[in-house]
Length: 269
Image 1 (cartoon, rainbow, N blue to C red):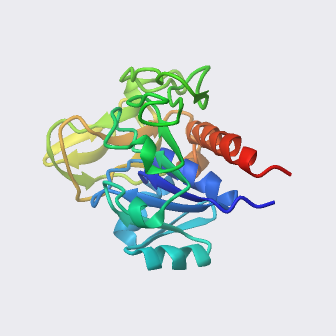
Image 2: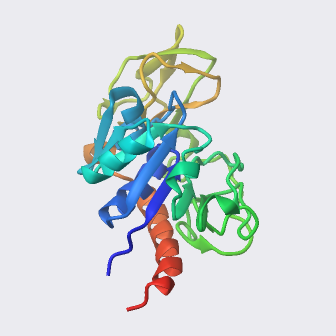
């Protein structure tokens, strides 16, 4: 028996893409919404790149930029994921999704409500299950990553990236000032400590650890001070740059579990 469900995902970055990818492989009709200038760092595994380039393929699943409800339907017929510029996810009024997933990872609720869909799922902190979403998926690395929360909230954001190869804060590159980004290196390149990775205006941003450049914010974009602009994987495995992370897969598994928990009850064998 097939569950012919429409799923609307707010967000197009790495975690949102992990969710969209898994649900598309499970044959749900997935649609995504994004801001006009996405700020994804792990661009090789972010469907938000389709906003700039028209389309983006991640591990065999294709997303294409769409503008209207008709174009959404056409992309579904082509087995692609439509992604729209629609920060408020206002397309939900026309689309009438069965499930809405807030995957913006904004650490606060940007307007998602229980009434947005029969099932509303929030990723990470900023939501309260039973009040503004039906359930939450834990996004904090550790023992509870990917766990479904049916009452209460997710763990608070620590501001410290999860450890990888013994490194936490050191593996993330941040803008030292507001300004325009200019690349020096490319995603997939191996770095040594002290290597310049990019410039923000005339200020270089250098690698603080050795590893492979797993993520890099888009060339030429204007960024605010302090925003994440790069990601170094100290494990040094090139494949990690082009495949969905274990964290995104765990979160996606939680979303899929939540959907099946609710809708399988309505479709017994």
